[in-house]
Image 1 (cartoon, one colour):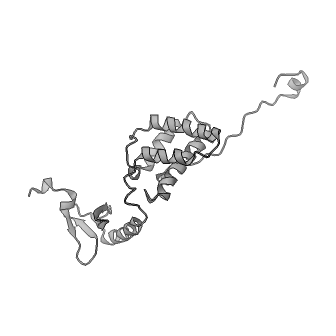
Image 2 (spheres, one colour):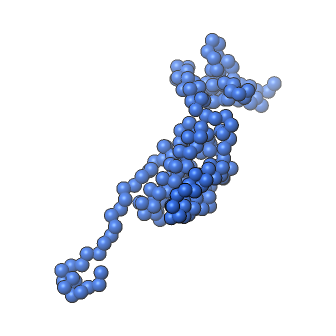
Image 3 (cartoon, one colour):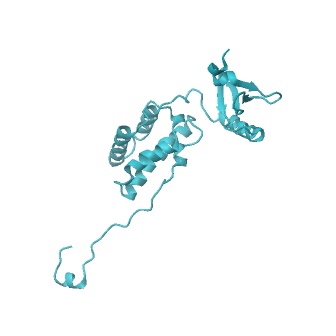
Length: 195
């Protein structure tokens, strides 16, 4: 077989006497492979160092128990539906705010709503927040961040993902700005300057 046309899996060679650890025959990177519920899970350990690979493999295998195999294909659109369903008991004003943010999110999200939740990266959330940052007051920015935190919190709680991509966002909160108030001078006050 022509090695140029081999899949990654076909290039992986089992490491003797070490369960689930494999090494790529061409680039030397290590991978983990484990069968769960009859399906093989493949995971790049992103290293060519054996000791680092062993540590990463152990961590990956511990985290596999935190994922529900039946939920891992959940899309962003499905997660948004879960979010909306879970907010039905909130006040009308809160639901209106949620609806406004979700509408903007759906319109501006560049990575498609059919993307798997497990594929979403912090940089993609940073990009969306950054596209709105210039027009938002800090309190509104914080509400957008709160939406993302709650949204991906649902995904973690439902075992769709291990960690929330929101945890990797660069700016997750901004100190609220002080409201600008006009304070008249003594002269303006005495003249009855309209406030």
